[in-house]
Amino acid sequence: MFVYVGTYTGPGQGEGIYVYRLDPSSGALTHVQTVTEVDNPSFLTLHPRLPLLYAVSESGRGDQRTGGNIAAFAVDRTTGTLTALNSERTGGTGACHLIVDATERYILVANYGSGHVTAMPLQDDGRLGVATDVVLHEGRGPSDERQRGPHAHFITQDPGGNYVLACDLGIDRVMVYRLDTAAGKFVPNDLPYAQVSSGAGPRHLAFHPSARYVYVINELDSTMSAFTYDADRGVLEIAQTVSTVPDDFDGENTCAQIVMAPSGKFVYGSNRGHHSIAIFAINEATGRLTLVGHESSQGETPRNFNLDPTGSLLLAANQDTDTIVAFRADAATGRLQATGEVTEVPAPVCIVYGGA
Image 1 (cartoon, rainbow, N blue to C red):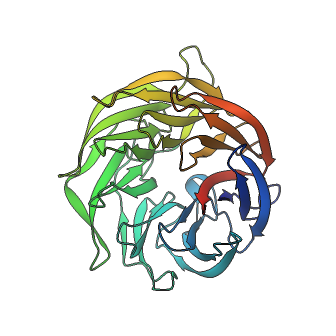
Image 2: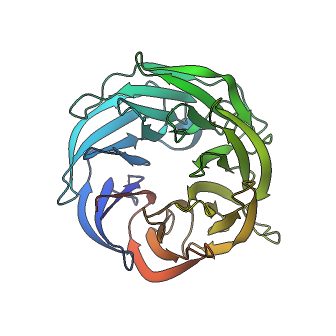
């Protein structure tokens, strides 16, 4: 199995996409390749079936992000190495998240800087085509610093591939669309969004394997929200919101990544400030959350982490201490235990697993 790591690039940071071979028994990473053809590949996704990888190119940080490019790479199944194919503009700024749609005909992109979501067609050879739709979200939230306008931060489809959900940190909404795959257009759902608390700042979400529940991690107020999900109508109804940090924590914190255990028994969220992974157990009858505990990420600013496909190994990317730390995940309790493997990677901000 291979691990692909996206980084922020520039002086004192990363050089691009780092490719590693993974020892799944320990979490040890052996360096294979560094790909420097793309600036700030802060999020990556693999094609679900073909040997292809796609990366955002986010040239800039914060609300002043200016880049809106996606880069396509061919993957060598044997060595894990990447070969650049092409890149295309997204039509927005600050591209920060992307997926391959369920039909495998489009790349869907969230653009944080401008607040747009984008659909980009895929050619037969995996190359990117010119965007077929660029939709601007509208509104703002109460934070003058972070919510003066829309900031699309994450985009995905439900497990049935029927609806597209996009977290917008700037307007405190999870937007819901259908994708017209004939035209490559976003069509607003009959109920076009779900609302989180004012000022919460929804960043990423995760579906329960049953597709009955959706969990949203809120960056600005350090919470996780549980929703019930009507897969027929694409409707989310909020059921619970819980804190991701301990009650006695009084420092500054923002949340980042959320990952569902393949078993559906646990969901994990990362804290930047408390520098931890919060672990929640899921009541599979109601979808409600119960805190299991917090595990130190053994570094600073765990912007991203990911479980391997078996759910037994978690790799945490500590952006500000330039490390990826390996943990074993207990299938019965959800708790994490460090394996002792620490890999030095400059400014790591995305981890994806590929190959077998």
